[in-house]
Image (cartoon, rainbow, N blue to C red; front, side, top):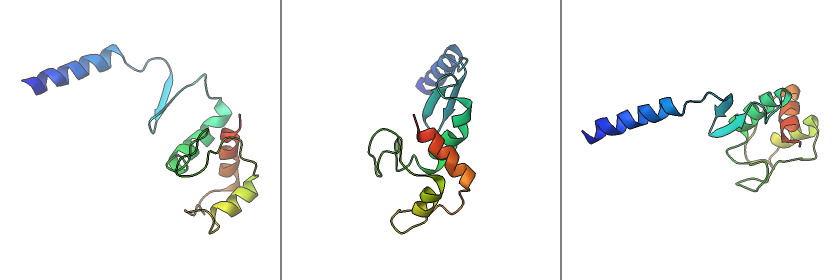
Length: 106
């Protein structure tokens, strides 16, 4: 009986507070459409899928903070595939790296 009541409360809560205000929810990150510009969305997706496990934008995590890193896409690609970086990312294209760099800029 307790389980049934809990499920019903969760269903009621989800219906009452549904996601109707244009929020993008992905990988535990909530950004409203107004907060992130359209030209940075692809970079955000790539960052969250590949970088966010070890890096945050504004504070150190397993790796350093990546807000406003001072690299171009070619230098970033060389670094990501070097022995200095803990994981290799050979799949990134120059365009994808540019999108990630654009996302990390203010």
